Amino acid sequence: MNSGPCAHKTCVEAELVQDIIKLRITSTCPHIQKYAEKLKEISIKDISKPMSDNPAYSLARDLTVNCAVPCAVLYACWAEAGLISKNLLKQHPTVTIEYKE
Image 1 (spheres, one colour):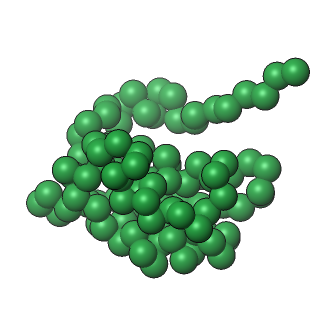
Image 2 (image 1 turned 90 degrees about the horizontal axis):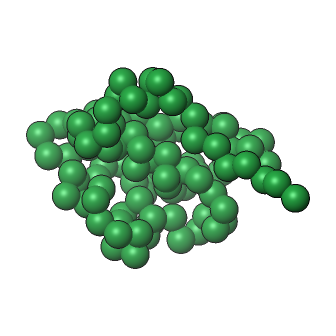
């Protein structure tokens, strides 16, 4: 993941083991490194929870509000759990926020 304006790079790797998704998050951002220490795994049940109850977001309390890493974590989890097509993600490998005046 290229975080854009902050210029940090983050890699999210997800591996499904039974009903738990094991996460490996590496980043050039010290805040994401601390986040990664707290979020080493997440259950399939939790990845579909609303933001207010989702561990990917609740553990991100120390991140800035415009950080897209928690969203990237959930994309990786959804793909690994088979909730979104990996082929579809390969066809559209980026999610873009476009600023227009």
